[in-house]
Image 1: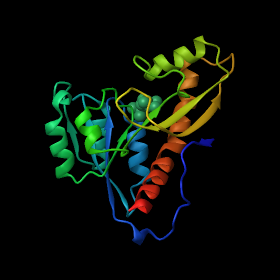
Image 2 (image 1 turned 30 degrees about the vertical axis):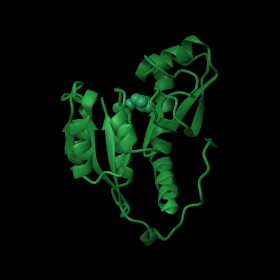
Image 3 (image 1 turned 30 degrees about the horizontal axis):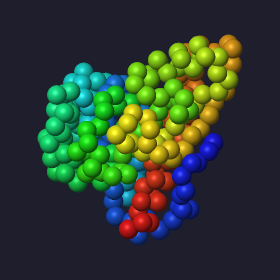
Length: 211
Ligand code: GRF
């Protein structure tokens, strides 16, 4: 495990902090979105307020219903201008955005409205296996094809370029010659479930201490 950005130690006095409202953006299954939502379910200072999807058949919407979290779908064309999306984020008092398997580029208007307040998880050890086309199983297939001996996850801030924002943390897993892309995907998902919610909490704690 490696933390790449500096974090102050966690402060136990939650009353010091205002509640942070989080929106999770997801395009597909949403297993990370659900895992994050469950992690913060009992948390008084972090609220998963909204799930935003870009496809009306994304399974994450079903998960949102089951979790009782409001969700909204913005189809691809609405992401070009982003006015409607920003209006909904504002209406919901969203402070921070987590991308969890979200496949569209984040429009500049949203990046400007949320500077250093959008983080993403990438299922590989950036800067390797990042950029256009490197998502989902494509990443794990490329890792196996290259004969890598390790893979892992990268949690990073989001900027204008795919997978190039400042790194926050990386966690690794072993890749052996016996691994297939499916087994690598399973190892990487396990790392995501274990670490992503906790890193989000640490980033939010650090944020709160700045104010
Ligand atoms: C995860 O592996 C995440 O790292 C990547 O997309 C996948 C989404 O999985 N960005 P899920 O939808 O959370 O199950």
